[in-house]
Length: 387
Image 1 (cartoon, rainbow, N blue to C red):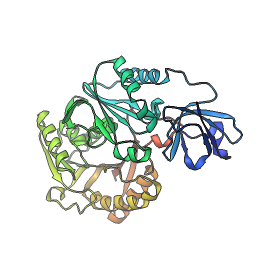
Image 2 (image 1 turned 90 degrees about the vertical axis):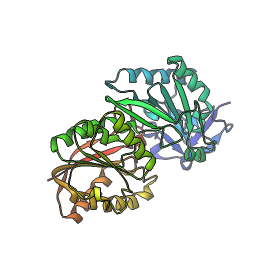
Image 3 (image 1 turned 60 degrees about the horizontal axis):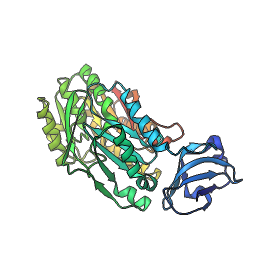
Image 4 (image 1 turned 90 degrees about the horizontal axis):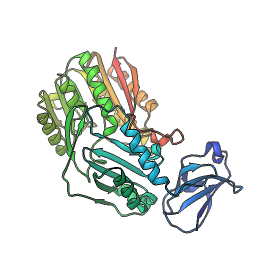
């Protein structure tokens, strides 16, 4: 039996405007069993078929579109899309890198599934009930491509939203190892932050190191996690201060510095939204990276987060040398470049200095974004010059 999701009458529910996520508030009625393995027919208020979707019976996001129009979804759609995603990654110019994203949810036509590669290991992050119901099929599709080991992670937040059980299954690992543009990196295995590391900033870390090298002077990596920007800046010969609130992350950062025979990196345990009064921070920097964790989960959080960001930036900007650069990062779709510009502008006004945005960046090519799924545009990096 199929599931039929009929939408309320709305201009947003025309074929050409249909969003990638169908929320419960947009649904007039659902007919069919509450089975996440069922492919749902999504129809408009007249009953005309708009799309097929993955069905989440208990979620606020009732369905996620996987095919638009009236054509039936092929029986091997999941296996085909997994194979296509991995083939596309094999064609990317990743260089001396073994840490990257193999599957990026809606960007690869597989909503609710993220697969990150860490050397010879994979981490699968499953965030929806329909993908969780298909996990055996997903693992079989990946094994048909190669025999890498895999961890399957169901985060607690996603489990609550989709009426699943949070879990982390797979080989017993404490760390993950990979290379990022020639630098060896070790991080904590799940359950930890995200899948273990943040591959979305990989190309930005190399780019910022090149910019910082041109400016000269030390680098402040605020929100460094396991080394991130600091490792690449140190590889470019720059002195760095790596700041994070997590002592465990800082221990990995220091270990990664030693493993790559680098020097000049000082670790500081501090909250980047705190007073920022540590002695190592009382200096002038040629480059600053402000890369906080996700602080905005919905639109209602934007005002509070923007003010917190503004306070921290007002404290940091006076420590940026003339001609220096600051990269301000957000990993939330709701806190995009307009909000970042506003916070930077107000902070620079409070500090009595002038900055100008010179570049806008996001995630790398291994994080494709579906044009009809704006929520997929979550990483924003604004780079500003102190004039």
